[in-house]
Length: 622
Image (cartoon, rainbow, N blue to C red; front, side, top):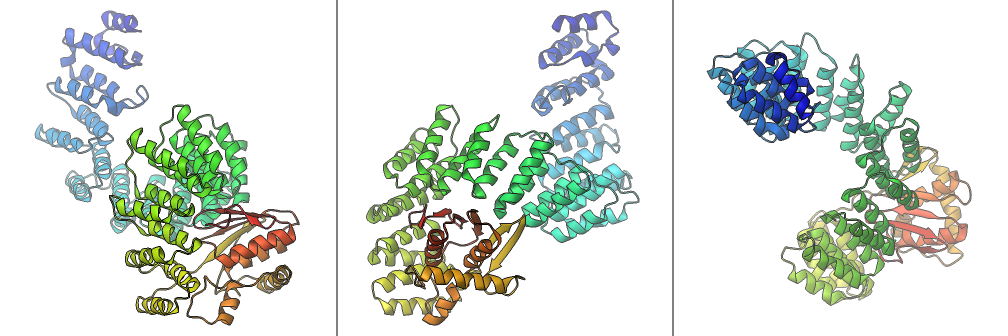
């Protein structure tokens, strides 16, 4: 290639020298060297074409890596023209130093070269990259000064800049004054509303759009997902399909992530089938999203299959499957995948260590966990974060090493947070250590005074020790601090529809009468094998009869009853909770799995519980 380029430049007219034959950086340097030796680089036409090659992303994957080289060429041009300045402004606006684009703009004005409608969109892009509204507003004033405020490309850039910076009202004013709006204008406003959390306004504008492209659909679906409107993200994807639009990888990541958050396995499976049927490339991001979705929806076996079949893997995809195995209680398998990851040359990240340490904690692998923790610091130079400290405390606490866990906390270089102290308090309850519990509980209430769960946990420990006066004191503290338990809810997916049950609004479901009758039937059967309501997790300022009634209306019990009504015998029932499973619901689910021969997979705030044949995968420690 080098000889061809030289011959082309030697025997053709220099200004028509087929510079497009350049396909690599070595070719570019040969052309540039020849132009310097022949003094042709002083010709602004030739120099500008060489400069254009530096920023041509059809030749170089990352033209911004050649910014220094591009600037070197620019410095050799004695009288740069508008085309040259625009090239440099464009290239630097998307590079690592977008502020330098304004330096070229200033230099251009000093040379008495005036901007055009190509100049300003890239300056606006630079200010957006800098996330600097002030510079964006100054650029806006320059736009008005030079009379480009009604140019559609410039207006689109301004709408995008203001919307991206959170100034949705300013973006809206420009949008409202535009005489002509294209799909870019509308999409910028939709994206701005989504970013500001104004999701209903975004959807209203989306619905009003005269035309939409795939990017618009992607923005709206992702906006729903980012704003925790996961069901709406899935519903909009269904509308996309009905309108005959074919999704891409970006859309499917948002859809599949939404399924993962909801625990909606049926929707997730259909989304995966859509990916396969439409030959959508499963890149690293989409592949990791699929792995994540399957284990979050309770199907760890399928998550393993998808992971093993991924054509490419990185540290994040490995971290995902390790975390999935950990929260499903497969500690040894998680450690095995961690070892395999290292053996294959992947570098574990801090999130990887959090996942594998969590697996060791849930699996009782204390020695292995401590070994991995030391390796993290020694071999990989990763300084422990609060999440890593929490895993070690939880691991020692689960093993009954309460003194070691407390001593570990005292020696930490940072102040422990609520999850770390909560892990030790939970261990104190299991091992009935009131002395350590009181010390840790007081620290917890100081760190997280509004968290009702810690008060209840500490009160239960006091109750087991018969320390009723301390329970009374805790109750007074809760009233003084206006502590309230957050509302609990449970989700269950039946025939592709997501049903939500919440305590306190038990009449909202159209089949609530049947659900309650099913629950009473199930309650009768488990009472025959010894069930008695455990009200220890209920608030301790309520009488026992009220507590008994309240625990029978817990959201997961209603979801289980509904699942038993709507599914065939032998079907696995999957439920997602927003809070930790209480002791009574845990006991009830074990007994129902034994009496009815059903498997239940419950995802709570901390982990998965696999109930089958009267036992749980968490081994009654969660």
